[in-house]
Length: 273
Image (tube, rainbow, N blue to C red; front, side):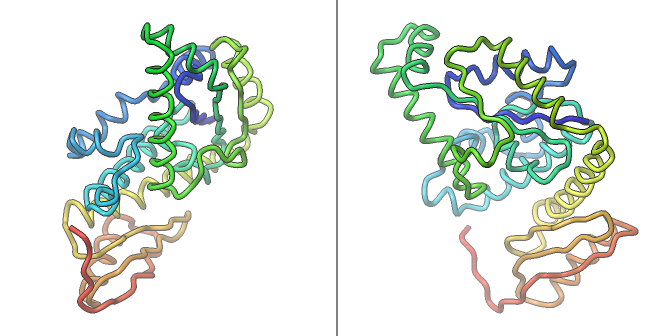
């Protein structure tokens, strides 16, 4: 049940490699449009997608409620797509969302600035100045996206199983390298563990999203950590009654699991709108 996540710089053949890798392995390719469609079905607006999707949010946008809604439903969408296994994700912080899942293999594709500028010039028939400006804007947006939502440096090589420079590689060759490396690294023994872990993460995220966005229970920063036997809820509420409501909903959605509270009570707590 291998799951491969691909993080990429612009013009490093990211989409081409992901599509080719999916073809070579017979895996499903979870592309940008599929995740966007999933988010739209959950009620995320096109405006929010434009504001947050692999972009660096402005200061006030990073504090807005729709930022949390986008992020929480993004995680649910990724878990939902990943639960079947044998899939390739491109971008959207997939490597960070799935980092604790057994059987997940994360790849970072890079290329030199010179090569990326040349590829952009060829693809869009642009001059060098315009291509360089787009490259810098994309790098800044993607770095800001990962910093805002995951508090990580996307260029940190330690976040990935494999970092591949595509300067001298075709998408076909890069895909073959990734497929071979994944086969040599990911053991089939972790299949059941991966399925279980994704199921736990998906259930926990669905509980959070239902409580916060469907029921609109007044609990702030709600998060859930999950294991095979227990779900622990964390956040901030202004009364014990709110906490009991949260726990009651979680117990209904996760029968058979122990539901525990790590929610703090802070009187008269105010959040940004």
